[in-house]
Length: 67
Image (cartoon, rainbow, N blue to C red):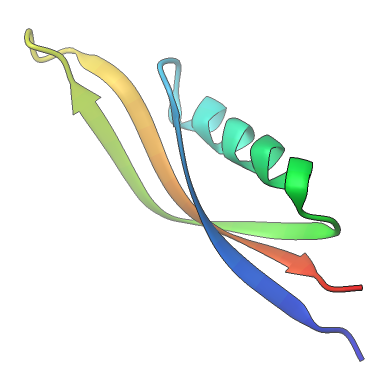
């Protein structure tokens, strides 16, 4: 029988949502073993004073299997 856990990660990037997702997953893999999936459940952009996109943020739930 397999047992999994889910943890929430919020990551950001100045490049794109895709880059923010990759950074969040890479960070999770530094401390979690057996990462199996990620569910992106929120995306957000931060605007600068001129109304241009300054930062992309994603909130994700990462699932990993316990040993």
